[in-house]
Image (tube, rainbow, N blue to C red; front, side, top):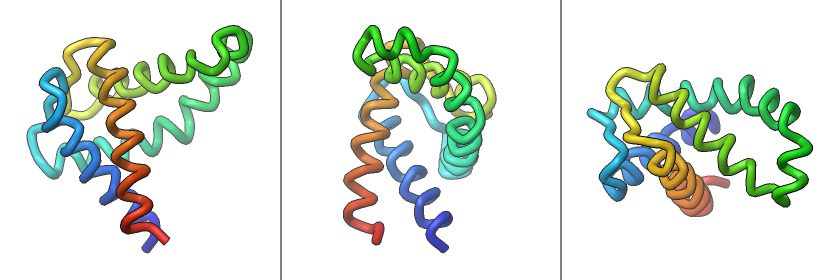
Amino acid sequence: MGLIIKLLIVVAASLFASYVLPGVHITGFVSALILALVLAVLNAIVRPILVFLTIPVTILTLGLFLLVINALIIMLAGAIVPGFTVDGFLWALLFSLVLSITTAVLDLIFGR
C-alpha cells in the first residue's frame, strides 16, 4: 500500500511541476503515472551507476553534480515516456528541483 501512495504522490508532484513550468509538458494522468513508474525504475537502476561513475566530479563539485544526474534522468524519462516532454536541460533541472520539493512536502502531509 505504501508503494501505491508513493507513486500517487510522485504523480501529483509531476502534474504540479508541469503546471508550474512552461518547458515541461505532461498530457494527462496516465502519462504522469507512467512517468512515475519509469522514474522509479531509472532511479533504482541507472542513478546508482551514474553516481558511482561520477564520484570524483561529485566530490569536486561538493555534490552539486547530483543535480545534473537528476536532470539527465528526467531527460531520459522524457525520451522513454509518451506524453511527457521536456524542452531542454534547464527545464529538466528545474523540473527535478520542483518535483523533489513538491514530493517532500506531499510526503510530509500524506506519508507516515
